[in-house]
Length: 399
Image (cartoon, rainbow, N blue to C red; front, side, top):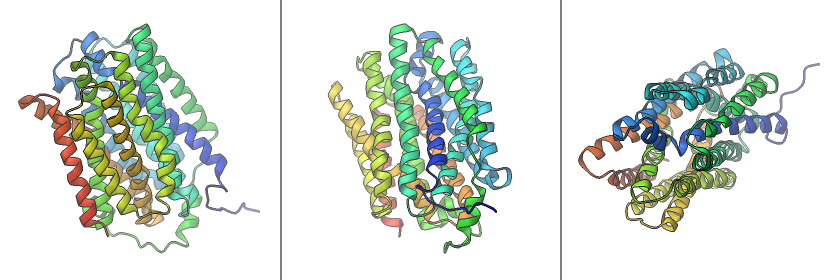
């Protein structure tokens, strides 16, 4: 007799928990670079030009974005689990390249691999969790998912900075990555199960109609999906800037490597922990209002950061930035799922994540352009203003 497929977080908590742990390892791979790569570029590769320094973020963002899209397109054809395993296999060389490469081009190549790894693994775990839980606890599920991923980024961002400050920039900070890859592969192969049958079950009861053109609707045509996609794009645009240029700005203002590690890690830490609360809230409160509030908090904190001087000020503003991001991040994904037919969910999320993660690259490119004409600090002011503009698109366009 075939086992009945039941949707729900409580009913599928074992598989859901395993996916959370896998996603923590996925986040840890990004955390390896979050704090010390700009320092590594300057000290060991003698790179100081902003355009060259941010090249790794541009490459990472473009590759991850494109991989997100194809993960969504292929999820129903190849299977979520197979894509997850492939994503981990691609990651095997990354920590070794970061430890031993003698040419900056190898670092760029490592970020190509990292983009593929993140696009395949993170997208797969997101879709699989949404498949398991159904509609009732979708926001809470996404809050847990993003919380584990970004809290892991924060922890590893801090540990890499601490290890680098005490034992040198290479190779010790990147040993963690070897562990993440090994555990990620083993869990994905032996413990994770595909979730296709859950999609089939939900498709029988859904009232959401299919879109004729998923790509165009999720990009802009649909007022709700389009508003969410543009906000996701701007969210990661400012995150890409924070990733690549905030450590440089802090160093220019005289902060030590350990202080930089603390300030840089606080933002994703608040972002990660906060989603445990905000994800659940998005199941009960108006998603449009939550997205607007979150983007406004991000914009205000970035604008004010332009005038910040003291360590405490940066810690406070990084916390507010983290709160704003925590409000929008799980809400993005649950809102996309709410407005999409289950059969098209993976593709819609893939399109959203395509535009969202292209924001990384555009954030880095905007930073490079601004730095050609103004002090690098002005990037915070410009991108903060753009984030405020995105908030009002949500306010005016979402229904």
